[in-house]
Length: 467
Image 1: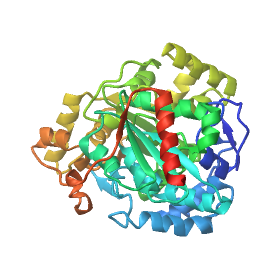
Image 2: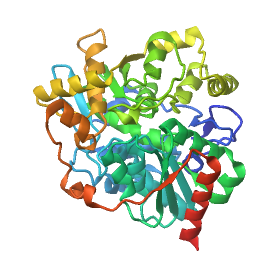
Image 3: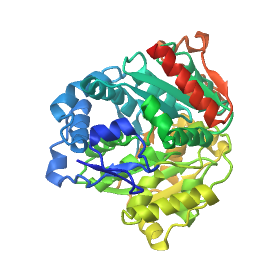
């Protein structure tokens, strides 16, 4: 299994090379050179497997034997042992055709744990075998940072620095990052938006001298391994509802496009997914693209669903590459224009083809609170992101009523107490292991949106740990 860059000017790599590199040298994202495709019989053989075994089987399709399934299985069994339910990602029925796929039973209460808890030991395995050390730098709109820190804390071969937009995450999200006192962990509160944080990370990867000096790597969804580790929960839930002998649809609240891209990848592998429904908040660039081919960036506006407060969806580039017939030059030019002009013209034929699979629905803050209230009245307490996903499933469902819609329930309601309180009057309690979160001391550094200052901080963090 080899991987190529969406922009065509980086050398192909194997899975381990992609894992450690994160972003390609040409600024593109790595994708499989060829997609693994399973037959209906092969999908059926996966039914009934415990989640860690299924995940190891799916991930092994992308590793090219390094590591192989036999190595991955115990690694993933240990990774998911910390989840609060043996099901790992249980399905909860909302109504006659809508199901919540609960992805928040990991240690940081968000779907990012589904990949991150496996990614940490995967890095350890590869780095130990190679005798190497890396510096992981990531940007977070809320949940990626805490999941990455939890996965990488106290690992001897990894230093990790996470950038978050100051004042634009929930207090729970921030504290889950800033109260971790491990020596290899550092947090930066950037004066700006998530898009600014993401741009800083990409600029560090583009700085070849800095990238080599600190041995830069990534664990956010620009890293293909993250996407590969998110595919299994779509497979597991689809199989549970009758696939491959029955079509399913997924509704996914998304900002950076990585989560819904993993569902698209499962479809590309032959899983019978009829439709992918994208849920957005007021930062609705993805929905505007789906409904009107309008991929134009606007100012990011804070919302009750901060993990989707994004206007530059990094993982969209992987879909763009596929939509453009894997034309790397056309992809690179489209991304260049988007960065320069804030607009991405996509050929009409490519857009129409994508719209056969993707649908979109956006919900503002008042609508989000109303949906949380409605769901609570029916006996289900949802966080703002999940509420948007369920609303999207209700408003733009597949035309065939026999097709069930599985909603990615991306976060525990306790991560967003203010919105839940406004909508229901309830305090969603944190699990016992996080009950003292508000009493823990915080440690983070405030920095301006300035590449030089951020790079200097990262260098200093590494020197402290390697001195």
